Image 1 (tube, rainbow, N blue to C red):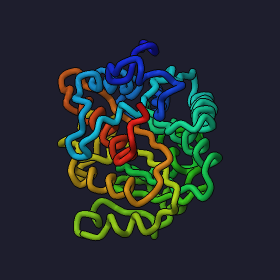
Image 2: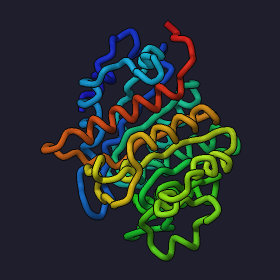
Image 3: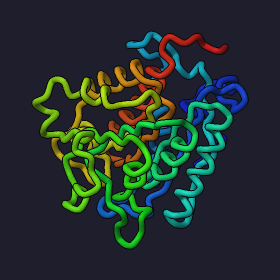
Image 4: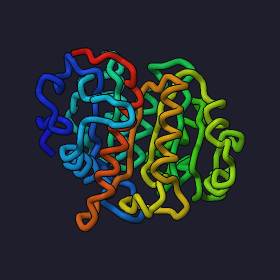
Length: 288
């Protein structure tokens, strides 16, 4: 991956770290996935798709790239433990520079590091996990830095709210707060699930969004696609409300496993990232 490229091909004036309000950290790592491989290619596919995306958002009537989006050097490592430590270090550094920090993976284990950094940077952090899988195992295949353990630490150290869950191991129930877990089969018949989720949140929210939360009919390009997921417009409605009603302090998007025969999911991921930024900065003046 060429780290010198600008996100979405935006002009250099909006891509410099000093002036950028947003930092995007690519994390092309796939060291512990257990079925479909390829999440390490996710960031590049996402960046390629972003360069072919219109930068005017119709819904918010804005061009959020004008806030400035700096594409950081990719974070890589030889093993998952080192990766988590590097993600933590790099993320924390940009938070200290008062940037709105975002990450794109890569497998979900990276979120152990990103959540750790945000939890140290913001008091009483709520972690909103949007995901098909509970990811609450204490360790898996001999390591606590597995993608199946992505939010185990967050369950102990933050206000973790899980949304869209429809696949888990029995052992994970011992770590799960059922009052803060929204299973997909229950959401399907509960018109008030969004209200209930938002009511459980504190002021500061970090979102970790595993793309397999989405239904595989619109997002087949994940390592472990699960039937019965979220669809595009309900996802956007939910995210828009979270951004409007709480202070979202950062987010990561993970688990895109690109398929060269179907580029649509890559574009969905690109559009989703840009939508989330558009919601975050909606109504704010362009710094330029």
